[in-house]
Length: 200
Length: 424
Figure 1 (tube, rainbow over the protein chains, first blue to last red):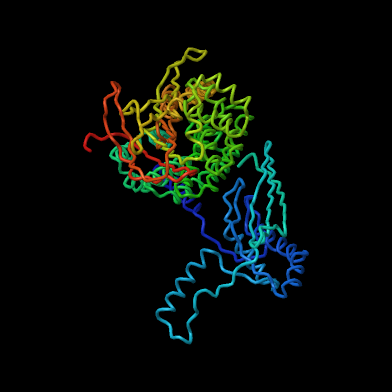
Figure 2: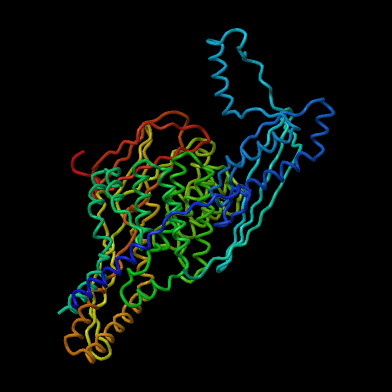
C-alpha cells in the first residue's frame, strides 16, 4: 500500500515537471507596431529617427538652393554612422533606413556606397571582357556624389535604484564633397525611462 | 523503513547539485593540453539551464574565444549579460532555499569582479574582430557598471586593469582626453590595491599628460615617478604593438568544514568555500618584437582579486551559515521530540548532508593578465614571448607569428597559455 503511494507521488512529481515544458507560440505583428522589450535601441527607434531626420533634411534651404543653382537634384552618398553609445547598435539597419527614406523622397539622386561600388566595378570589368558591344556598360561614366551624409549616435545613461534613464542623441551631417562645407545638421533625441522589478 | 528511503532520496536530491568545481576536471585537462575546441565540445555536452546557467555561459564564451570564435563568444557574453540583468531581481523562492538548504540553492549571479570581466573580454573580442567602436561600447558599459558598484553597498574598489583597458581603447580611437581620465582612474585604483603601480601606466600618464599639454600634471607625475621622459618623443606618432598575455587559470573554490557549537552545546558543521590557487608554470615573461625585447608586466592578478573578493564577504557568509545551521538543528530537535530519537537523528543527517559550501565560480578565467606596449616603426616583425622560471632560466618560447605595424596605429596581439605541457 505504502509502496503504491510513493509510486503515485513520484509520478505526480514527474508529471508536473514535464508539463512545465512550454510549447512555442508565434504571433505575427505589423512591423510598424511599437514593441519596447528591453528599453534598448530597436527597430522602432531606427525607423522613427530616420524618417523624421530625412524629412527635416528635405525641407531645408540647401536642397532648393542646389536645385535652383544647378537645375538638377543633388547626388548623395551615405558614409559612416558611428556608434558611440552604450549599446551595441546595428548601424547598418539604420543606414539602410536612411537610404530608403532618401531615395523614396524623390528629391535626391543616390549612388552606391564604396563597398557596393567595388562589386559593380568588378561586374563592369567582366562585361568588358565578355558582354556583346551593344550591351556593355563602359567604365569611367559613374556619377560622382555631391554630398556625403555622416553621423553618430551618442547616449547618456543614468541609473538610480530601480529606475534607469536612457537618452539617445543622433546627429547627422550633410557635407559637400566639393568644398567640405556642411550644408545641413540634423539632430534627433530620444529619451526612455525604464523601471525594473525588484522580485522575480 | 519507507521514511528512511524517502529521506535518503530527499538528501540525494538536495545534495545532487554536487560541487560545481568538481565537474570541471575534464575541461581543465583539455585546456592544459591546449585543446580549447575539444574543451568547448565537452562543455556543450552538458548545457546548464538552471541555477548554474550563468557559469555555463561564461565558461562557454571563454572557451569560444580561446578557440578563435570571437563573434560567437560575444553572442554568448551578451546572453550572460541579459541573464545577469534578469537575476538582479531577487527570487523569493530561491532565497527561501538559501535560508533552509544551502547557498547553491540561489542562481549564480557572478561576483562583482566576474561581471566586470565580462565587459573586459567582450571588448577584447571586439578588438580581435577589428571593431574598435564596439569595443568602445563595452568601455562605456563597464564604466557605468563600475560607477554603480562603487555607489552600491558592496563598495567594490575600482578595478584597475579594467580602467587601464578602457584607456587603451579610447587611445586607439584617438580620444586622448577620455584615455587620460581612464588612466588617472587606473592609477588611483592600482594605488588602492596592494600591488605597485605598473611602469607601463606611469609611462602612459607621463606621455598623455605631455601630449594633452597638462603641464602641471606632467610635472607632478615626473616628480612622483622619478623617471626620465626621453621615451615620450620616441613614442609619439609611431606605431605601437600591444600584447595581452592571459596566463594560467583562476583559483578554484573548495569546500572546507568547520565545527561550531551552538548555544545549547550541539556541535554543528558549517561549510565555507576557500580558494585554491592553480600553479603557473613560469614566473616572468618577456616580449620580443624584431630586435627589441621588453618585460611583460602583471596588469591584472585575478587570483588575488578573487581571494580579496571572497574575503570581503566572508563575515556576512559565516553569519548566514550559522543561522541556517541553527535553524536546521532546531528542526531536528523538534523531530526528536515528536518522532523519537531516530527521527531526530535522521534530520541531523539530512542537515549534515545538505550543508555544502557554494563552490561556484568562473573557472576559465586566467590567473593573471600580462601586458606590454612597444612603440615600433612601420614594418613587419617576427614576435615571440619568452617565459622564464624562478631562477631566471628560459622555460619556453611562444611564437606570436609575423605582425604588421603601421605608424600611428595600434596593433593588438593576444595570447592565452593555460599550462606548459612537457611535450612541445
